[in-house]
Length: 244
Image (cartoon, rainbow, N blue to C red; front, side):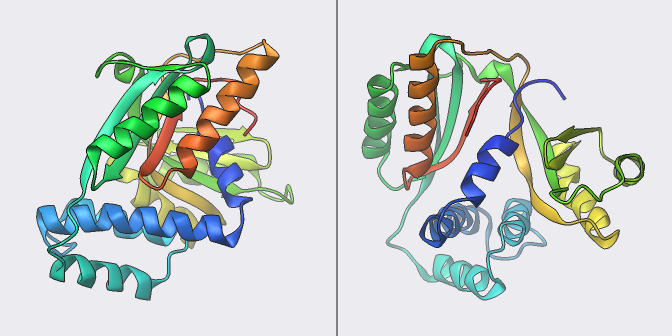
């Protein structure tokens, strides 16, 4: 799989506190609200909602929370969220793509622009880096104890419909077509593998390595501050030696 694997960021998130984990729940809830308002509350006919429910479950969001969020979205007329994407450059020209869900576009754009500026980057025009990223499905499987047979997992993953597979430290990363990710996840879970994460994501076609210590420090801070923002859903980049 070419480009930066998002696992470094996923692992970083999973090491955070329960309070931060609650933030993940809140962010997914906002995405569900948008999906329900756009396409209704029935996941059978609303494929976007169906994907988000599966994403929520993959992130260990309790079923009660998911159902409550859907019901709230159906009855709520006060909250109006929209999805927006920002593109820009981090230190040394690292490509950064930010997706957000917001009820105040001016606030979110202002915050994102400030993060870029503060940490030696700059927000660019729509399309300036988006062409570098492609949509994929990504499944992360735990191998912390080292007891997963790589050959067997690769065979099962490819049989289930995966398009790529690689070892990445204490995990295996399985890549799929975007629409196949949850079906492949389900097959691998049934086969007994511990799924740490499964979602539609983006990977970069090219990657950049940072050598300068200041660039590395500021790039880490840029990613961290963007991910901490309540409006930001995901941060994608093409920094190869990301240490988050």
